[in-house]
Image: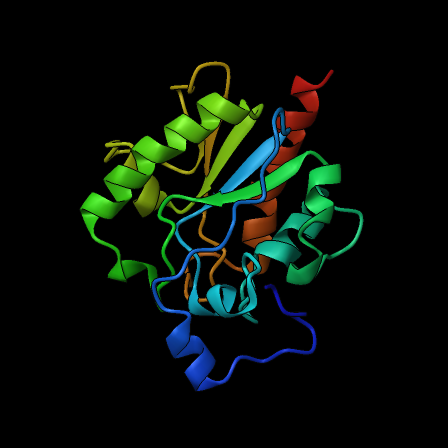
Length: 190
């Protein structure tokens, strides 16, 4: 059962118990964008909410890019569906760091992700993590941005990982990449 993110701080025991659990996808048919993380972290496993760890920049980047009218908290993730947005992950199991995943887990996750996209048919799939996308989709030379290969009718974008551990991007840099996606999605809707 998800716990209220603003008031609940997982204890070390809670985080240890959250290892290797899964949390439900936030998905519905026909979304504008299905955001796809690499895998849930331990805070997400302990709280039941995507991108729940303090310091994760997903929620600020989403707002600063114009996808949401205000910055949502992880425990408000359900509101994304009303905006035509959803969240899933390449690999379902929680870890302390994404580098704990094996290449095979990422490849298997890429296969499962293709199946989810075929089922739910979002307008755009936005994978949040260059390395994970390269491994999951066997695209070693991929760069951030719109990808030349679609999944059926679904456009594919790669965005930087919003984890606070990703020092290559500031919050402003992340928001700029998210904004480029939002502007492209807005054009698709015209």
